Image (cartoon, rainbow, N blue to C red; front, side, top):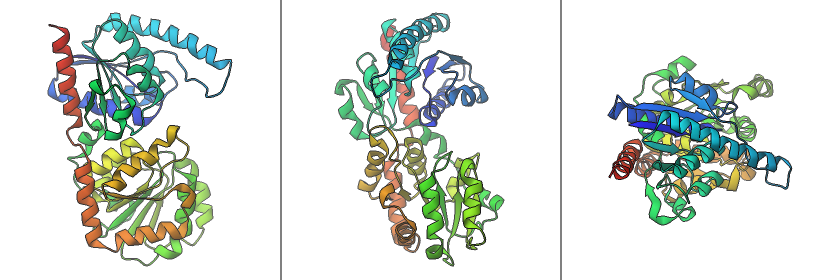
Length: 366
C-alpha cells in the first residue's frame, strides 16, 4: 500500500494518524507512507520524530468573524491545493487519509479531485469544519462516536472507533508508578489536564487536598509544565502525604495500566485510551473547544455508565473530592465503570480502517 496521510494542528488529529500508520506497517511491512502537515503544527516535530517521511503545505484556518485574514486564508487554501497536487503526483498514493485539521482539507480535497481514493476519520462526537467540508468529496468516512453520523452523508459513514485505542489496548502494568515515588500496591488516581495542563483543574485539585488527605489511595497530580512552578508555590508545605506532583510525564500511556481512575479533559484521544484499558474516569470537558465537542464526547461515556462528568463551571475542591471519593471508596462501582468503559471502546479500530482502505484501493483498480 502507498498511503498518504494528512492531519495536524493538535495531538487529537496526529496520534490517531500515527496509530493507523503503525497498524498498516504491521499488516503490510512493505507499505510506503508519506505524511503531509504544516510547518507550524505539532506534526512538524511529532511525525519526523516517529521516523515517518514528512512534507508540508502552507495553510491557515478561517477567522470566525469578518476579517481580511480570511481572504489570505482562501488564497493559501488554493495555493496549498496546488502544492498538494504536486506532492500527490510525485508520491502516487493508492489512497489518501485525512484525520482532521486545516491541512488535510487541502490535501484530501486535491486527492479527491484527482480521482485518488479518499478516507477521512472524525475522532469527536461533533465533526470539525474541515471534515464537514471534505465529507462531500471523499469516498468513506470513519467515526469514533455514533453521534457523529448526523454530521455526514450517511451512505459514506462507517463506525470504526479511534485507532489510538488499538495502540494501547495490549499495554500491561510495568511498575512505572515507582519512578514517581508511588506504591505499586495502592489504588491510584491520575489527575491530568492535558499536555499543557488545565488551570481550573489544577486549582480545584489544590482546593480538594483537605478532603483527600489520609485516604487509602494515592494521587498522581500532573500539572503541565507551564503551570508547575506556580502550582508548587500555591501548595507550599500543604501537600498531603498521599499526593505526588509532577509537571509532565512524557510517556503517559505507559503508566495508564496502573491507574484506577483518571480525572481529566474529554479529548478524543484520551477517551480512546481510557476505554481501551477500561479505566473509570471523571471528565471535566474543556469549555474552550469548537462546538463544545468535549462535553458531547464525555456525555457518551456518562450515558454508558463508564464515567462521571463535572462541568468546569461547577468544578471546585469540594465537588471534585466528593466525586473522587464516591468512586475510589466503592470497589463495586469501580468494577462496573471499568467494565462499561471497556464495552464502550473499540480496540480493533486501526484494523477496521486498514480493511476499508484496502477495499477502496481494490474498488479503484476494477
